[in-house]
Length: 446
Ligand SMILES: NC(=O)c1ccc[n+]([C@@H]2O[C@H](COP(=O)([O-])OP(=O)(O)OC[C@H]3O[C@@H](n4cnc5c(N)ncnc54)[C@H](O)[C@@H]3O)[C@@H](O)[C@H]2O)c1
Image (tube, rainbow, N blue to C red; front, top):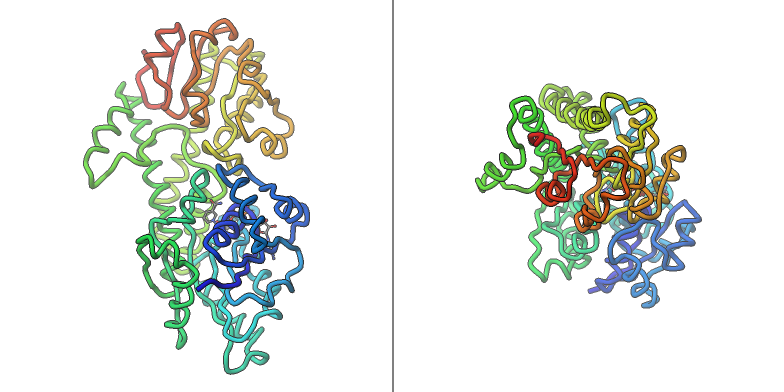
């Protein structure tokens, strides 16, 4: 059975969710407070680069079942409401800023029908769902007496770059539900997710705090795995060992696994860094701060890799970056995305510029977003323009475009054929055979 759904917040999560829910057969009203974003989406323009999203938007808008609006009263006909607004890090603090989640609930509350279900998807500090349940009761209890609106939590695990696949066929669905009507909530969510469930997606039913924690615990684990291998990279650098071979060897143990053991400049983006910090802050509020002090180290290891990358660039330039030209390959925090939030690549580029270098950045998709975030940096539309005259090249985002570069052809462009692979994803043998000095984090300097 299909439903009429609302999606509140049409950023990365919400835009993809709205298009995918329409693709699954539902009718979707997607609401955002950002009028430009809404106008773009309504015209089929995604506010971000995500493989396949423009095509999916075109196809789903053409069904007539997907609308984008700034008018929150348009949600009145919906029976399920997904809250997909942002939960950024609070300025000057580790804690998450949850005010948009509360504002979204307040905005839809006057339009909720009896028995409708509000489903939180944003990543929130544990306890938020209980506070929202209270607020929902306050805001709608009297008006909808007898068949009050309810709240469930359904955390989102999509990966940028794979967002459509991850939404259409997720690894698992987690439903956080509580209260007398929880069986009805489960049944309703099963109808909403009928397509992935029919394809065999496992679903877990848990209470509200567990649902909130599943998401932050997953991100804390992934961040820890990345920082673990980057800590090993630091030791490898000191001992003259090779972290890539070490990762290959330990990754063959299927209790460990090779995924997320790519040593390099570490994690960034709009989720992992802010989520582990918010998790620490929330654990502190709950009196469980000791349990998560290791995440402070995870964060510190991650930040140190960025510093190390700039130090290596300095070494390659003979001890100073002053008056040197640095080519940066990549601005996005990961490939197949134009997201530059907390991007290690942009941070490193800015630090190199601060150290006196002329830095020119290339990225296949993220230059417009990078220009907005760091307007004082210099960008090149073509890789060749970024590389021309470079004293050192920094490979900072793992786009396949950069793996496909022919180093022999590039030698003539640069002032000095010297590359530092911040992602350990180029083939050292190919670059060295073409006459380049190839260095990488955690690997011996041949
Ligand atoms: N981006 C990801 O890969 C991803 C994955 C899983 C979970 N999440 C979580 O999803 C949430 C959203 O992340 P995002 O990356 O999509 O953020 P985003 O900043 O791209 O989008 C948030 C959107 O919410 C809108 N908004 C804010 N207040 C609103 C309101 N009251 N009514 C309507 N719209 C409102 C903003 O205008 C913006 O368009 C966060 O909690 C994030 O941690 C993100």
